[in-house]
Length: 145
Figure 1 (cartoon, rainbow, N blue to C red):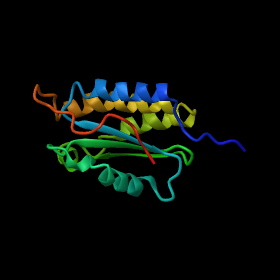
Figure 2 (spheres, one colour):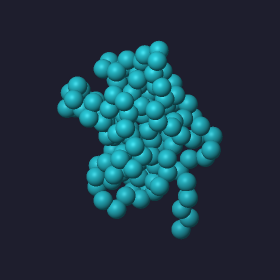
Figure 3 (cartoon, rainbow, N blue to C red):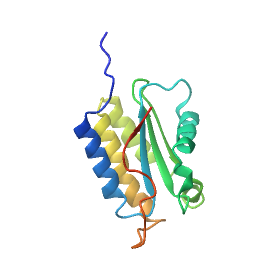
Figure 4 (cartoon, rainbow, N blue to C red):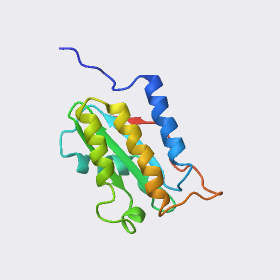
């Protein structure tokens, strides 16, 4: 059986990076996407490991977000840092996760990720608006495992 080694082409990865850059124009929050084929455990514990490995927790305002996808296993999670979790409602990520799930169930990974990123920017902007002196604290490039 043939398995893809990568989920996205270089061009598709650039579309995701562009989505991150666009979303971060409205918020001081930082968005990171990590993609790997398999997840041997539940997605949230793995996403938390990746969150710390990538240093998403090291942003100045503790407002980093990780969108984690294990594409072959069809698992994903969204992790917000402590600064976000301190101010947002408990169900803050629910609509974003449902939108992702809807796209992923149809094999539309690119659309699902880009939609999640697009929603994350304005959601975070309510609590962490963009400031003129904001610095890009995390690379916008996709990390892969």
